[in-house]
Length: 75
Image (cartoon, rainbow, N blue to C red):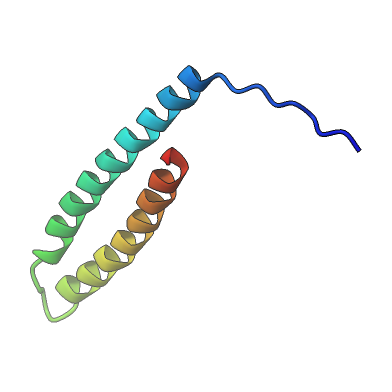
């Protein structure tokens, strides 16, 4: 059995890794902005604020998962 040779353009690989790192940083900043906006939602008749805060926490979890994935891919 022979192994195939895989050629990798390290310059392109480093460039894409840098883009992924940048993307994860921007997503982290966006998730922080989103969390700030949702956590300060006012309560109107006992419903609006808690619902918006819960949505914000769910979105934060999703964003943080994606940030970790992009950071892992960049490594």
